[in-house]
Image (cartoon, rainbow, N blue to C red; front, side):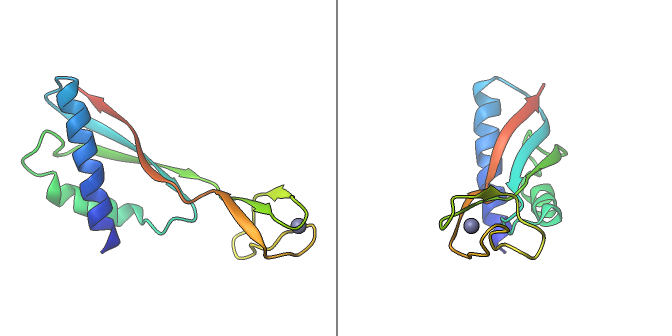
Length: 113
Ligand SMILES: [Zn+2]
C-alpha cells in the first residue's frame, strides 16, 4: 500500500534527474533504506515494474542499500546499534531513546545512458 506512493515518488525524481541529464534510458536506480523503515524491497520492485512501463525507466534495476539502525540513549547518552528485538539501551536499560539512523528512504543515485 504504502510502497506504491513512495515508489511513485522515487520514479518521479528519477525521471526528472534523467531528463535534466538528457538521458534516454535509466539502467540502475540506487535506493537507500533504513532498517527501521517499513519499506519492503520486493513491493517497491513490484510497483516499479508496473508504473515505470512506457517510461525511460522501464526495466531499470533497483539496488537497495540498507542502513543499520543507530540509537541514542537519552538517559546516559550511550550511542549504539541495537539487536534485532532489543531496542533498550544496553548500558542502563532505558527505553528513552532517539533514533539517529535507520528511518531513511531515499533515492541515492541513478545510472543513465
Ligand atoms: Zn543508557
